[in-house]
Amino acid sequence: MDRLSALDAEFLHLEDETSPMHIAGICVFAGPAPRFSELGEAIEAKLPGLPRYRQVVRTVPFELGRPVWTDDQHFRLGHHIHRAALPAPGGTVELNALMGRIMAHALDRSRPLWEAWMVEGLADDRWALVFKVHHCMVDGIAGVHLLQALLDISPEPEVGVPVPWRPQPEASAVHKVIGSWVGLADDLIPWGRRVARVAASPIDTVRDAAAFGVGIGSLAAHLGSTPSFSTNGRIGPHRRWSHVSVGLDEVAIVRRRFGGTVNDVMLACVTAGHRALLLAHGDDPERAVVRTAIPVSTRDWDQRRSGNRVSVLLAELPVGQTDPVARLATIRETTTRLKASDMARAADVLVNLADLAPPMAIGPLSRLAVRVEHRVAQRSVTTFTTNVPGPPFPLFCLGREMSEYLPYLGLTDGVRVSTAILSYNGRIFIGVTSDEDSVPDVDVVTDAMRAALAELVAAARRRPRRES
Image (cartoon, rainbow, N blue to C red; front, top):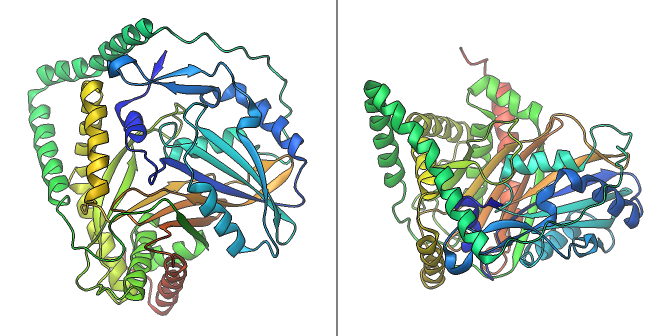
């Protein structure tokens, strides 16, 4: 009996009617769409390697343990795969609108927490597949692994042999409680090893404790309330979504001239997007504080286990900067300082400690926090920005090559705009989500991001190569 981690369970606790906790992506394919039945057969053939796709979340009585995964006794693939068609002309506007509508609805918790939508009618003889998965099942990197498991790495489709599947009986209430407490004992084992290392190496322990203290101090310093402006505050149930893509070669040109990482360059573009949005809403970027939470993976790339393995960095975006090169330099200095501060490591320790907290306290406290946020939205975090490395090679579905992989990231109260960034086969794809009621003009962000990268590329070509 598999239990959810404390972090996975938190994504369930924080979900409500205005904040569905799923992540998603649109896979766009070249060529005519397959038959819907053919797609269903292809997905069904992959399910033996994806056990979570036929399991449901069940709570433990009286929250005496964290929720558990159990086989769905009534699994039907038809409950999870759907089809839709775009109205003419089937372009970006129509695709973005459909994505906003699909993403506004929460997944049905009585069933396995995923959906796939086959979308027909795209312009230029294309079709799309929308995968929607609850955040309690996957983080960004696990989502990429999931996509690679569902699709093929060759134009020749992998023909799966149908495997009869019979669900295992659901454990009784008593067994769920016992299993949860046995699992808690397993959670204590890594901490026992840490205690043993402390005793064996006190000097290293002192150094680690000092680094942890610095990290906690840095985390606390970035949790103060930010000023109120149009792009933070309470959210409604509806979503807008927009996307844009850029070439990895363009980002490489900027990095060679100005230094930094791919993530630094993309954060500079995100900053330009938020600056443009503030100006469009009549806010003063010089006075605004835009603080973004940046998930940091703690997962080894080859670690295939589902669930979330992430920590976080909190960074303030220099939206007051008008010069794109100065903006990038500030971002580069900020991320370098944050990495050196051990903030992500300290946050990771806190996440692991949460596994030891009593679920009967965590669940009610989390739900209380959600109710409070509905009255007074948090202002510590303004936005989310996630950047996930995707496969650098093409993927295929039933022989059709995937040309685009467009990511989606949701919202929570206080966060009216979020940005998901994902690389795939030589390009970087960016999806920006907004609350339709307060930020209907999400295209302002994606347009500004594209323009910001173009400005950086032009500046890089005008300047001599950066000294190493």
